[in-house]
Length: 123
Image 1 (cartoon, rainbow, N blue to C red):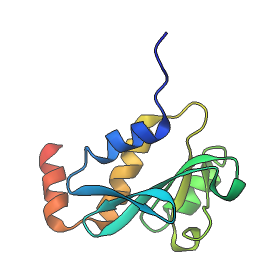
Image 2 (cartoon, rainbow, N blue to C red):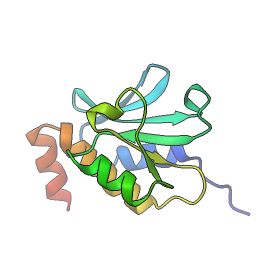
Image 3 (cartoon, rainbow, N blue to C red):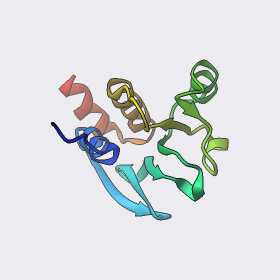
Image 4 (tube, rainbow, N blue to C red):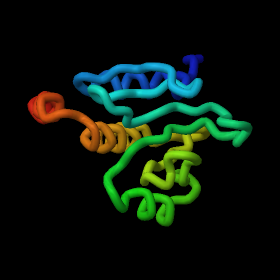
């Protein structure tokens, strides 16, 4: 029987497929950077919330739209939620294609012109 991949391993694979990305621990959580700005972080039971989740920066308006449409998948994360970040639950069945798309959207919010051009050249 194949071993189930851990969500953080899959996130790293998706993030590092984007140009000019890196990972650093920030506030105890694996955090992903596009150039010099953060666009995503991974949280496992953050302050006892019971969730395995991705928090990510998205364009204005995305948070409300996603949380209202699919509250079983999306939530407003603490601390960064007021800035429009979105939480994505990663426990259970995960649509990794959707997560990849959201990561790209978040990356585009922070990446420099050169990194975005590199990404667009790949597509």
